[in-house]
Length: 77
Image (tube, rainbow, N blue to C red; front, top):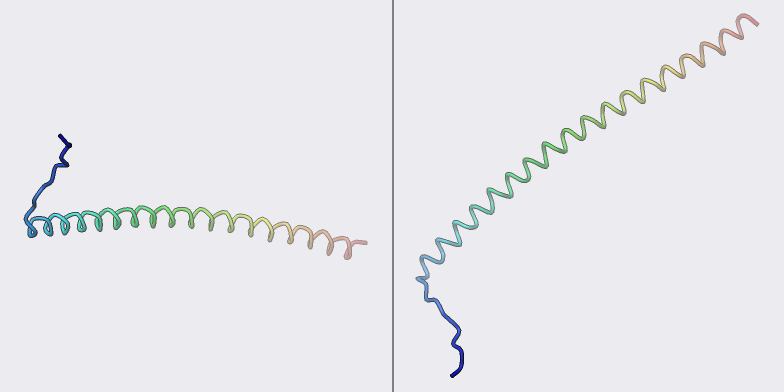
């Protein structure tokens, strides 16, 4: 005797309702994930901006010190 594959008969309306609910759940999950990634991106962008600000300030200070040294030597010497 051959094995029979079980089959299920579902009402089409119930099937559509379940698919619609699954689609709504999937949309909520995607929205939540996008919000989480957006917040992470904002934090990362802020951190990179702070780092660029610090590096730029150090370069300006270094340029000022070097320029002051050169001008000081020209005036004194």
